[in-house]
Amino acid sequence: MTVKNICQNKKARHEYHIEDTYETGIVLTGTEVKSLRVGRGNLLDSYARVENGEMMLYNMHISPYEQGNRYNHEPKRTRKLLMHKSEIMRLFGRVREKGYSLIPTRAYFRDGKVKVELGLAKGKKTFDKRQDLAARDARREVDRAFRDRQKQ
Image (cartoon, rainbow, N blue to C red; front, side, top):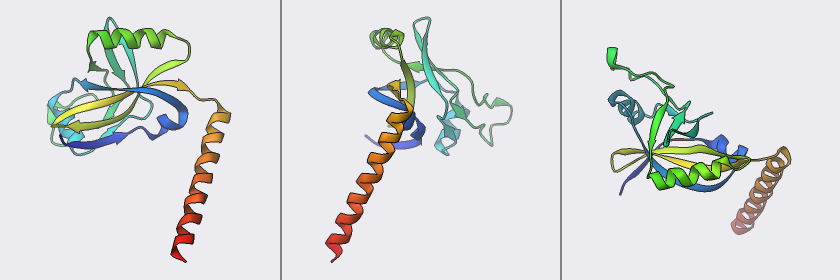
């Protein structure tokens, strides 16, 4: 099983508490897949929503394929995500709760197929973000001190 990352949504981990992740397939056209193979995808500001019993992904930007001529795709079109109906209904129930969102955290190739990892997320407050930054800085300082100590 080979996994090759296409793009990550690093901002998602900063803006949200990711409580659970789900792997989904995505319906794409040929030029979109070719563009993703070159690494031309972006998940920034994208989100997923359940509509008519189907999971849809909004605002994922896939740049047009350079050799795509007239068969090229719309860069920010709405794309369908592939999940089991029971998973979709479970997520729909969770998202209806106050404060939950479905945020794509990364896109990758698994065995030649494009997959999107969706995170069930709850928004962070400003002080939570500051706490996370302080904890990361403290961890970095400890690691640096530990490395310096081992060098001596």
